[in-house]
Length: 217
Image 1 (spheres, one colour):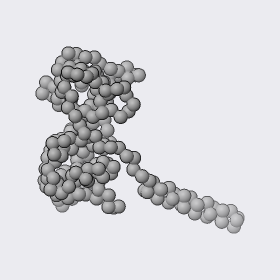
Image 2 (cartoon, one colour):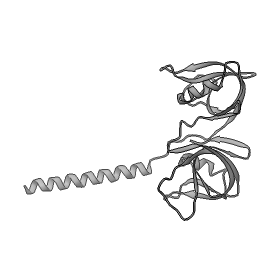
Image 3 (cartoon, one colour):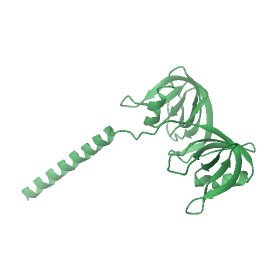
Image 4 (cartoon, helix red, strand yellow):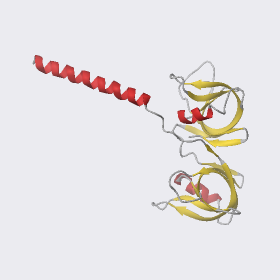
């Protein structure tokens, strides 16, 4: 019986040690590097729709003056986009280069405005959020986590822009205190929470600095 109790104690100690080691390894593991992508404007005509293997629309071809582009988007936008975009329509699209192994001249939709309707692809949003919001303001402080890593920007109007750590590290080189920025994103819901000073916390989707817009993810 005594030997059994000792074995259980040793097993428990080993379990705790392994758990602590795993947490430490996760904390110190390098961040997945995703280069900051500048959003570009593409103008042309919609020529045809593209569907995925499940036959849901997830893209369309855009013929510009000199090139033909495959514009990729989340299948969740299929119904909305097909209701406002018609074959042959002239449109302008904000997009970044696709990095998913797609064919040449493939770009990924960030936002599109047509017939006075603005549509954004927020498929990457990973937090509960309201409708996409837009804003601008001056950076007054860099927000850091417990390890001293920059994770967001605090603006003059008490708006906090949140980014993935990898993106924040790159933005840190161009988004300094005193810089004026504009942004799009999703308001992070804070139901049930209370603070003496109210801050609007935004999970950033795009940020514009010195007239250059970047996709944030």
